[in-house]
View 1 (cartoon, rainbow, N blue to C red):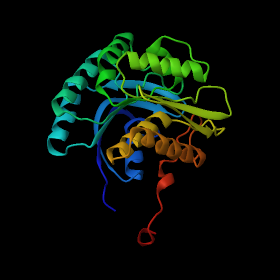
View 2 (view 1 turned 90 degrees about the horizontal axis):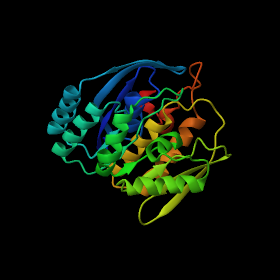
View 3 (view 1 turned 120 degrees about the vertical axis):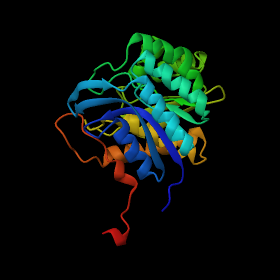
View 4 (view 1 turned 135 degrees about the horizontal axis):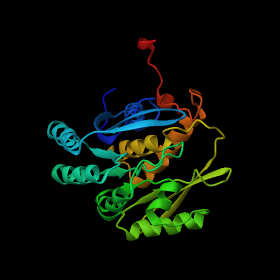
Length: 270
């Protein structure tokens, strides 16, 4: 099997392997594509929470992006944790230089344990400049609330928030409904032409660490291979749900999901 496409991931590292760059690489690999990385931060974390965050300098992040793309041109880019104004600015400048067309933004703002991973100045530039640059933004409900300054407690609220994000310059929005109290998961895909609601049975588990990173990387992978954005979202949600349902149950807190859920080992490797 040869890689179907090439994805550049711009995100932070998760030492416990369930989220961040580690989840992104596993997802892209499991779905049959080639992963490259520009690391924005190194975190010490486990399934119980984040202990520390060490930033990589904006100059070094730009260098990773530009030097990598100079040699291997990505078919799509996935952006995750960008936790300072200077880093977002550096990434924006690098994106302008490499002229990538397919960009998926997962606006990582709050860790699973509740720790805030981004400051207000960063949120401002993300809203005023970065949103306009990307093909799709994939906030969960707490992130959509921060970005739109609204309270979300229903499907109608999610649609209203998506409209506000469109007014800020987003081309396509996927708001993930996992934080709503409901037995059916409802994720909303929204653009100026359509509203689609993806419905799936909610899996009752605490092991959902890294689902947002995984979903956005899966979308970038399918999208890079020529699927439409809507189809990429639909297929990625199925992959994430299957990975949650077959999770390995590691750790004492919010454990990781099973990124290998798509892989069957060929006989010659057994």
